[in-house]
Length: 189
Image (cartoon, rainbow, N blue to C red):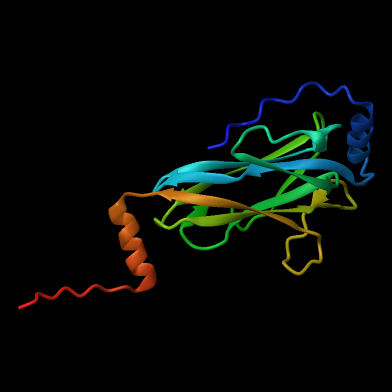
C-alpha cells in the first residue's frame, strides 16, 4: 500500500502565492501540476485499504518523480477548484462515496488530496478509475463540480489495478462462479 506523502514545505513561491490569491478572489485560471495516485493496491478479501490521490501545483511539481515505487505521477493542467471521484471498473470492490464528486480548492500550500476506502468483496482482481475534472466558479463565491455525466466538462481518468489477496479456496470458488465451469467426476470401471 502506498504511504502518505510527507507534508509540503512552507510556500515560498511568489507565482504560486499569486495564483492562490487569484483563486480566492474568483479569478479562475489554469496552472500546471502533477496528479499522484496508486499504481496497484493489494487488498485482502473482505478487508479494506485506503486509496489516496493528490494534485500538486507547486512550482516544479511536474518535474518531480513519483514519491514511491507504488505511486504513479502524471502531469496535468488544473483550475482553482477540482472535483474527483473513484469508481469501480468492474465488480469485486466497494468504495465509499463512489458516485460523489468531492470538491477541493487550491490554497496554501498548493496541494489538494482525496482519500477513499476500498473494500475487496470478491476474490477476483479488478480495477478502480480515478476521475478528475475542473470545478467552475459560481456567482456567489466558491466552486461547484459539474456532476452530470454529459456536462462536457473535461475529465481525466487514471486506472489503478486492485489485486485481491484471497485463499486458494475462495479464488477457485470465484472462478467457478464467474465462468460457470463445472467438473464431472466419473469412475472408470
